Image 1 (cartoon, rainbow, N blue to C red):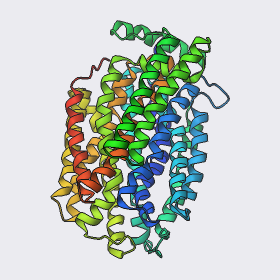
Image 2 (image 1 turned 90 degrees about the vertical axis):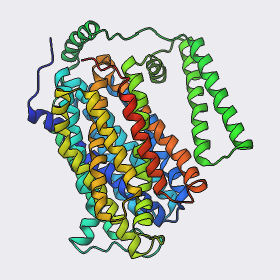
Image 3 (image 1 turned 135 degrees about the vertical axis):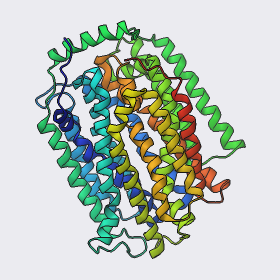
Image 4 (image 1 turned 180 degrees about the horizontal axis):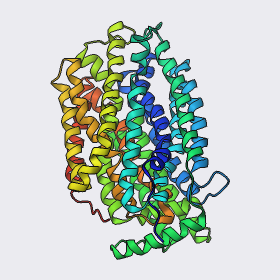
Amino acid sequence: MEKPRLSFWQIWNMSFGFLGIQFGFALQNANVSRIFETLGANIDEIPILWIAAPVTGLIVQPIIGHMSDNTWNRLGRRRPFFLAGAILASLALIIMPNSPVLWVAAGMLWIMDASINISMEPFRAFVGDMLPSEQRTIGFSMQSFFIGTGAIVASALPYIMTNWFGVSNIAPEGQIPLSVKLSFYIGGAVFLLAVIWTVVSSKEYSPDELKKYNDEEKISQKEAGINYDESEIAGAKLTFKGSVWVAVGLVLFIIFYFFVYMDYGIGVLFGGIVVFGLLQIIAGILTNRSLTNFGLVVVINDLYKMPKTMVQLSYVQFFSWFALFAMWIYTTPAVTRHVYGATDTASALYNEGADWVGILMAVYNGFAAIMAFLLVLLAKKTSRKTVHAISLCMGGLGLLSFYVIKDPMLLLISELGIGLAWASILAMPYAILTGSLPSHKIGVYMGIFNFFIVIPQITAAAILGFFVSNFFNDQAIYALMLGGVSMFIAAALVYFVDDKH
């Protein structure tokens, strides 16, 4: 029994909640560095203040994925998590711009990102649950469309508030402008309403229906040569692997602390290696006690048994998202300093440049929305791998061009390349991945796949501040250039990925 094909409007409704999710992400990406600087953060401190967000995703997404794989109640399987995350994220969006001091803003970023992840992860699995294989590319592209559409408005909201409605974008030193505050309030409302639309207008297959569809898909995967190892890793093996990770993390920490260089970002990076090892040791202990149904044991086992395609995509994701995170952290300081020549965060010139960054973010997201469906057609004519590689190259060129362009208006051209890469990053890896996953574990594997979004973000937060401060003379523009190079590396790695339908 194959899953029935859904109509365009059914796919539209089931993806509509991503409009709200991207409102939250776009406001966060375009304005959080601005909020941090306004509250007194130095340029080299910004990456470490961002680090809580990806760390939260690293922890939350596989847990939520595992829970949603094993949930069924009156709202369904994935929809309870859509709604819970939306409520929490909307509250965080309202509180964030009212942060009185820097540490409160950093804490609210952590809470906001955790809440957004609670909603977002099940949305990715929802496509795998509801759509047959041949419709999954259009399903993820529909999500890309709503991500781009939501971000157009959300990224430009402070600019719109100031230039269309006359709301002030200047505030006393240490305070957030009213234009930013109102933008976050609107974002909170849109997030909640968009997710409620999906919850109300979409249905989910019952566990019995889903089992029938998944059994058929499992047969198709075997015929395509895709197999999943269902065996459990021995407790002793997990304990040994965990001990190795702990030892590596501690040795690196000691070497860097005493002989190289140490700051909070690098400490978090090596501390994360130690924590990952400790979690494996705990999983090994639980396995030895026959407690293999614990979520931690399941996630660790599934991590080590990732399908081949997922392993190959993990390298592509690492370099893609390293570039994106460099862009999100450093576009505001790069544009305000390198293009506008502003250094005082309280000045009108700085705030003019910061508002223009919102427009740049809106443009690349808008172009991504336009290209989302065109990429589906191009993938049918060529292949998903070809489309993704070309898109990443265009994104790399867009980031590198920031160095040579001095006219703010011309940066709009740069954003077209970035927008093409963004549209592809949001759709093609997931479309390639989903067909290689065991159907009963789509949620947990989508959560694990998020590791390869989060790990590069943690890496970027750990090292970019050090490079900008010590090698680039506090010139944030060079961080964007590193991001451009990273995009090209990701494009080259795409050709090593097995894409089996």
